[in-house]
Length: 353
Image (cartoon, rainbow, N blue to C red; front, side, top):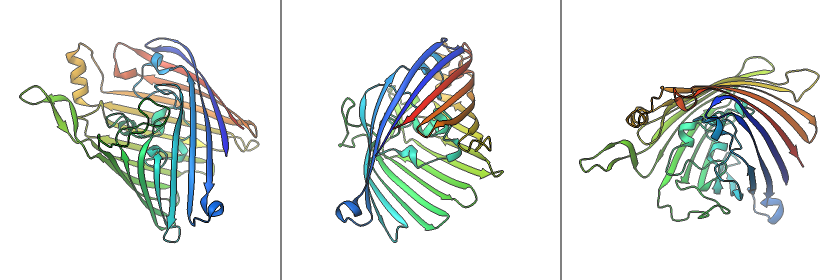
């Protein structure tokens, strides 16, 4: 069992929609149970995450499409974040997971991007914003099933079927068991030898409204959302790893057409401090033509893209306490020409109990 607390102090020092400071936090209680040891259920284990979030929303000030803090949520409350069972088989080369499941934890992941606080360095933004209520990821997951198979020590295939309507206990409506909005289907194949190379694709089983095109009666055309993504991760020195992530969507049912992220992580930064880590990242989201056209019709002139640059450093002050200052520069927040480029400073305190 583990208890982790994150406290972020975020200052939008320049630009965006408004300058100002905000605080937010997240408390996570995690538990894992080896069911073989507990009840003799061979090859099975269970996992549980309870999450409580509070504080404010700094992106209301920064006004970005990508977000500036990966623990920011739309509604702040206690909730059951994840709860799943996993069964291994085929000599532990395969595993099936069932329950409330976070897709972002396993699909499109570059480990060396994990320190960066910008949400875009986690789940690709075009996937995160897909579906009727966003993909199943922090802080709202959904019922799903994930199957992974490792044919060799350095290769894997994985696929998941997840409810398209997210919701967990503690949120209004709770868990959706009707699957009336259909399912998200996602798959990825990867190689994890000296680095990582992964390719993936996703789609939904139900069509959704086109954000611009209409039929003869004026009703939105119905389109099937889909997309693809790539992850490349490569050590370049003994302490430095580079990453590149990218994704595409059909661009008809959501604001984003394409996104990409790139960066470096250095660990340790100082030989005398083995936990000292420096990371730098560059992320860009490119808007779909239909979304820009709708904005133009509403009298808003949008550029094609929003670009974020982030520099962050993390170090352990003690075995239980970690401190992470972070600086971000956002060019053209929300791709809105009326907004000044934003500068956002963040400092994260993380305590493991």
